[in-house]
Length: 348
Image 1 (cartoon, rainbow, N blue to C red):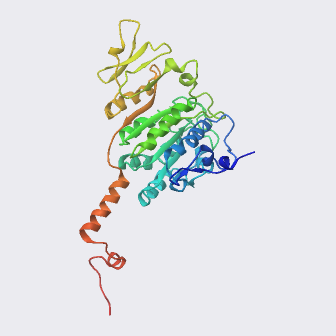
Image 2: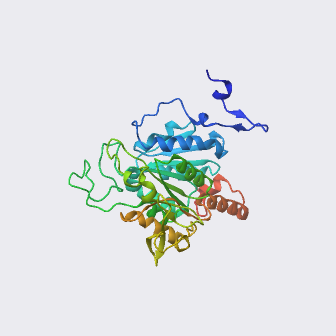
Image 3: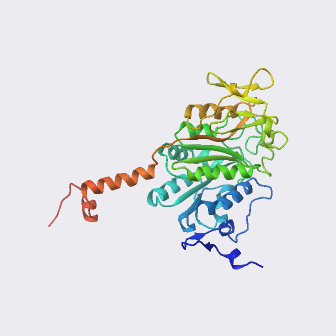
C-alpha cells in the first residue's frame, strides 16, 4: 500500500516542494513498443527531474510528430504535442515569452532533420535556451519504416527497397556547424550516461542538443549494435571527456591522436603512450567538429559524450535585455502609442 510520502511530494524546511521521480510519472500507460530504446531516455529524465530544482508548473515538454512525440504524455509536467517538424519553433516562442520556464524539446530524426531541419538550424544559430533531445533510430517508425535523413547509404527500407542512395546527415555535425552551444551524444544501452548528459544539458544556458541513439525493434532493429552492444562497445566507442586523454578499448590500450585535423587510432602497446593521445577540449568548436566527423568513418570508433560546451548569451536573454533597455530609454509606453506609431492620420 502506498504511503502519503509515496503519493505526494514532500516539503523541505523552507516550505518548497521536494519531488521524487514518482512525481513526474503520470498515470498514463506508456505505449511505445516493448523493447523500444525510448524507454531508456524516459526513465533517466523522470529520475533527473527532482534534481532540476524547478517546480513542475514551470517545466514544459514540447514534441513534434513521431514515436518521440508521445513523450509529453509520459511526463507529469506541462506539455504540448505539436505538428510535424515544429517543436523547436513552438518551444522557442514559449521560452521567449516565458524565460522563467525550463523548456524541453523531444523530437526524432525525421521530425527534426527533415521537415523540421530549418527550425533546428536556426534554433542552434539563435542559441535559444532549450534542451533538445533527438531520438535517432535512423528510420521513420511511426509511419512504418521509410528511410529518414539519418538512414545509412544502402539501407533497405519500405521506401528504399533497393537501398538508400543518399549520404545521411550527421546531426552532431549539423548542430556544431550551425552554432549550438551544447552538443552531446548518447545511446540507449547506457542509461547512466544518458542521465549524465541530460543533467549537463539542463545546467547549460543556451541551446542544448543531445542526439540519442534509440533502437527501433520493429523497423530497424540492431542498427547500433556494431558499436553499442556490451561485448563490442569498449573497442568501438570512445567517450569524450573534457580535459582527459581520448583513450578507449576494453583494456584501455587504444587512443586517438590528431594528424593535422585527421583523427588517428594509436596502439598504446606498440610504441605509444597516453601522453601521445589527444586531450579533449569541449570548448573548442573546431575540435568538436573534427571528432564528430569520426562517426562518418566506419573504420573509426564511434564518439559519444559531450562534444561541445560554449558560454554565450542566449537569444531569450538578449530579448529580455533589449526590452529592458528600450523601456529605460523611452519609458513604458502605451498601447495607443504602439498602435498609432510615428505617422498616422486623425479624421474628424
